[in-house]
Length: 303
Figure 1 (cartoon, helix red, strand yellow):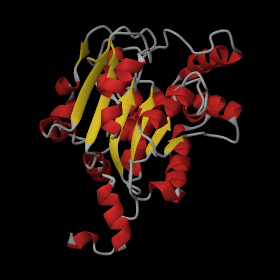
Figure 2 (cartoon, rainbow, N blue to C red):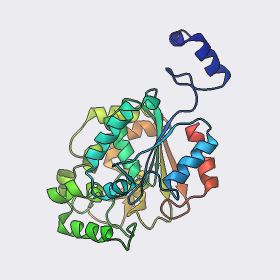
Figure 3 (cartoon, rainbow, N blue to C red):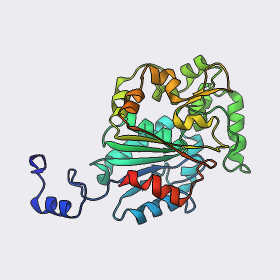
């Protein structure tokens, strides 16, 4: 109890009696930070807004921050396609550092590309601390193709394809197209490692950053959810940190067979052996899960 002696006695007593977490000056549920996927926005009532609502209903008193990148919902959606990911991560790190609700630490939950973006936050910005990272359909080894594009009838999908056709690893495309920044061509590994400005960096493929490894290993749990019938992510193995075997685009290998794991460049091998890596699956298409599955598998990780 000595370590908590700086807390006012009444606050400490209330925290213990109510079963809250007595960490610093915060009592109650650990806050949650969420980051949406491509083509979505922070507060869409049919997606992120709905998830926020059911989390709040299941965990009374929880503070949920659903990240908005931009000044409004339209900008937030557009930025999920066209705003440099490194800039987005920097903006989020600044936002989290200034949020008084998060100073004692928080859990995070990323949907689709939001999963690898929040991992970048964990690796680059350890303060305030991230406790658990839940990646739902995140593409941690990148993608090699877009079988389906959200908003297929909109001009955005046409722009996306045209930019990719210009050359995914050119400086202009890398700095202006979000999806190019985690495009991983298994048949052009050297070009990918040299020119990818985001994914190759956070996956230790541009050099060894011990801080990235140390910060990721500080997580209590790194949860990865894979959709077994995913028709959007190519390959779905990326959602569990697996990928195509280098030099071809047919055979995939699991995380444990990758050099990233064998050489333990991010500490994933140590985390796996310590029980910090959690692999969950859903028998559905991309981001298609039931409330029952969410309540059973995800809510306990947030309590």
